Image (cartoon, rainbow, N blue to C red; front, side, top):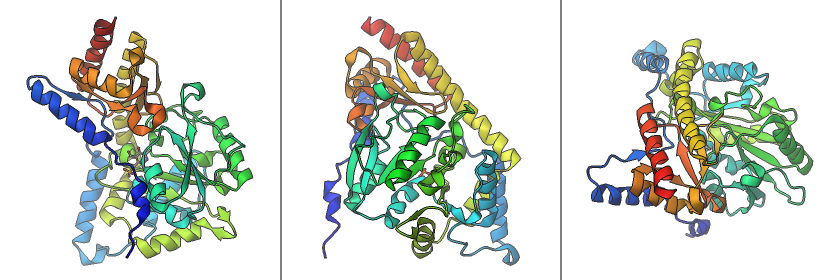
Length: 397
Ligand code: PLP
């Protein structure tokens, strides 16, 4: 037996363990000091009432023979797919029900979609990036090339016709940079993909944070996307499903490569390897899309938006440049005084007791950047920003 030796090519991710280690050292040396975590990528507000009620009812359904549900359809229940179809229609995107696949979250689908894509494809991944795109392709041994996301391009790399990429990852709103592509920029990517017979994997996990009407929430709002794009989405950040687990992937029927339908391949893959998301979770997810659910989740998102505003206003005040925070829960700031991201991490922790995420953990272009998130409480965000302000203004000037 020979294991998958591609796993030898993976670099160990020390990012979050190293952060935890340094934070523990600090707390040990300063037991009286409260540490404020501003690096968390998990939500902190509970599931909304509409979701909880729907899930309670779903449990009751399972208690009675007449309403009991065993194995469900692998691609998800129609009651949820209908809701998602209507949600897309609000933005002018008409989907067939069979183009929507319910999943247990975006991370699974980001990894699993590679099952239906050949291993000889060249993959284009932005740097910095959500590390899952890189690692899942290394596991399969695919050739990876990187598209630099930096200050010069507003952290939004654009297509380069000198480079032939078969699979292209786009995440907008972006983790970690908070940058968002506008319609014209996405049109350029779609034009490139259609001309080069490439596939775009569009990660829309943060679409719910888009508040600007001009910014697309879905790649399918752009003409031509249906012949070159798959969209992967999640209720994790939209509705606090990080622990509950539910997402969806849209694979258009028009997505044909080498006379093979990616929709059919994915259906075949899912019906073979996946037995669906639980009825209880899908009922909770359905409630997200009801009028009541929509109102409640938007209150939660507004709560996080206010945190983002507290952060960006502080950065504006002290003259630190950043990307994101609008249409996104992430704020990607430039480390002041030419510090590297780990230097800034240490100084912010030891001087202010505030923890963020060093940009170096997301790729080489993140080395001088730092990620803050809007997922904490108002109180903690305000306190952390006061401390940051004091630290930057007093300690360095
Ligand atoms: N895509 C991006 C860009 C993310 O940041 C995350 C989670 O942080 C995911 C996907 C995973 O989402 P899920 O919780 O649905 O697996």
